[in-house]
Image (tube, rainbow, N blue to C red):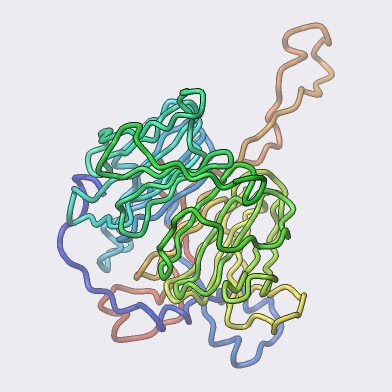
Length: 419
């Protein structure tokens, strides 16, 4: 994105079913592993990594709908937009250089949520914008081509006080912006900035959904939402929900919560019970996002230990089996919490972000006096930090032209960039 974006059309052949066989361990990993059967050997893995390091930890990332760029959020309350390196569209991978943001958009306070306009395409600047919500601020619409503030939506509570949205989601056609608050969803029409909105309470006469609406998602198949309650899923998560994701066919809903190690899959044709679960290590209140590939078969998620796991949802246990689905692939993507993950819509690329808030402890130095300022200095020794945005290549190595002619096993490499 941005005025510096790469022009011209690029043809990619590594899509659809071809991509689904590009995940698996590296050759070095295989040397240390026991022998596997033929079906496991058919799964190759991710190897190229492009990384951007930042002194302040990232809290999430979000890929543009057309896959041309990525926006990230960090603790300094700045949204940064990165274009995919132009070398990815050619055979000159040895010329990959340090990646830096092409746009920066600063919010006034802690950013709660942000999302792309669903009809965004880099070929049409009028569709390139991002909605964001931050503490004590209205919902902002940012121009993701030039970085300017395009419009504001001002939600007010029953006391006529400005209130911040905890979650955001555009309707699939982009005509409406849904904002989550405490026991209410406010709906703005994107062609009418200002304070006018529809108010749709989620709790009526002590019936419905209580608490803060912390995440909102639309199904690609069932886009109608009129505010009425269709179903209330059983309570299974230990903490509040932090992420929702529908499968491409609209039949399944994946949910994850804070301080909750389970990602749950619900069959919306029979929402009374969990279809199957997937385990990851989540022991903080931080949002840990997950994503599906375009086929809806592979689900990817990071965890608080920096490990990325990939599950094949087609191998889920039968109904009624409480055994969690085992990951098809796991690899150490970061040395710190991997909080964001996103799969490219048509290229074999996966993006991940890492970092979390660190708390230093008083120094244990015996030389410093207890009543001196130096004796109370906070020490950061031993504090592990990995604040990065990483792109992983999940397909065969070589140029785009070579990939169409010769299928090579994929490997996981790192291509590192700094902010």
